[in-house]
Image (cartoon, rainbow, N blue to C red; front, side):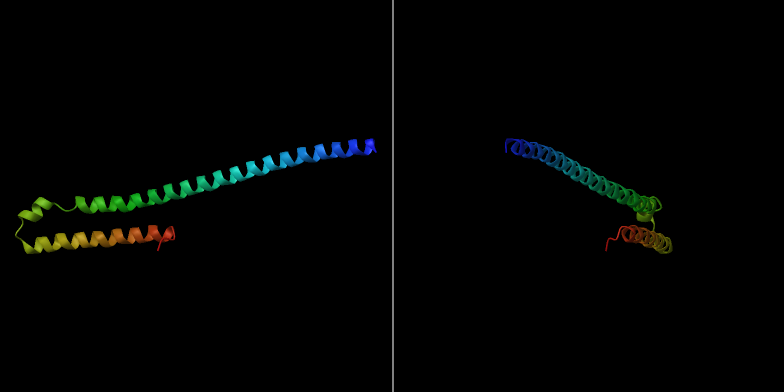
Length: 108
């Protein structure tokens, strides 16, 4: 009977060690996957932000093409109309770029 008890105690000890090892392994797996998920989120945010830089660049270009001093001083309505048309065209192009970026990232 004592022999049987010792064998059972030995088996119990082995099973406890296996359980502790498996729990640690599971914990490490969970930590690895959480890190992967966090890294993917960060990458997605960075990628989205990088794409938005194109929109910002287009807005900057539109602003550079309008000479506000000239517009304020000008009394030529045809010149002002042309400036306005250019601004609207730039806005349309920028809106197109923004729509593409948003669609690419499934933002509605």
